[in-house]
Image (cartoon, rainbow, N blue to C red; front, side, top):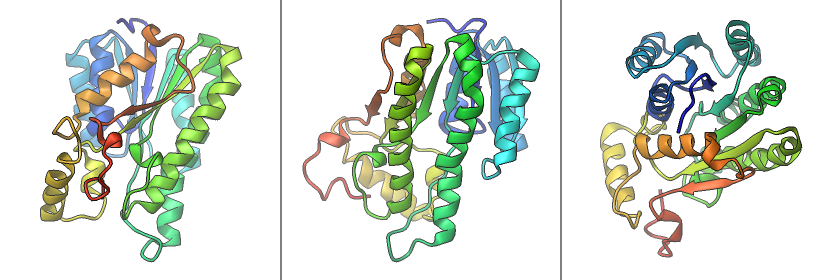
Length: 261
C-alpha cells in the first residue's frame, strides 16, 4: 500500500483517530494537510508525521463550527499543493443526552460540527477530487446504525453522515470519485472524554462496554486507522457507498443489556 505523492487532508488530526491516521498515511509517503483547534496538539501530530516519513505536512488551525473556516481549509491545501487526492472527514463532537435533557444548543453544535462542516468541506473539495480521481472516507459510528441510550443527537448526526455518504457516492462515482463511511464501535479517544462523563464514570463505561464486544476489548485508534487506509487505497478501488462497520462484533450481540451505553 503506497500513498507516495498523494495529498491527503485529515480533519480532527490533533488527537485520537485523526492523529493515528495521519501518522499512518505519513508512513506510506503521503503529503499531509492536518486540521484541528489545538495548536500544541496539532504541532505534536505534525512532528509525529514528519518522524514517520511524511513527504510534507501542512498544518491548518480551524474551528469546524465556522463555515468560513471550513471553506478556508480546502483553499489553503490547494493553494500550497495544487491538488487534493484524499479527504478524511474525521472531525467530530459528542455530547450525551436524551430527548428530555438535550437542548437546541446541543442540537445546533453537534449538527454543525458532525454534519454541516462535513457537507461544506466535501462540497468545496469535490472539484479537486474529481480532477485527481480521488476519494473520501467519512468517519461515522455504529451509533448511526443502531440506537443507544443517551446518544440521541450524536446518533442522529451519524445517521446523516451515512446517508450523505451513500448519496454522494452515487452522485460522484461516474466522475471517478469514491466515497465511503467507516463506522466504529467505541474507541478510547478525546471525544469520549469530552462527552460529559467524569473520569470515574468514563472508566466504568469503558469497562462495561468492553464486555459488550465479542472480541473482548474496545477498539484502538490503530484498528480504525488501518481500516481507513484500506478504504482510501487502490486496494478498495471497487468499493464506494460502503457503510463499513468495524466494531469487534458488537452489532451481533442480541442481549440488549450488553449494548446499552
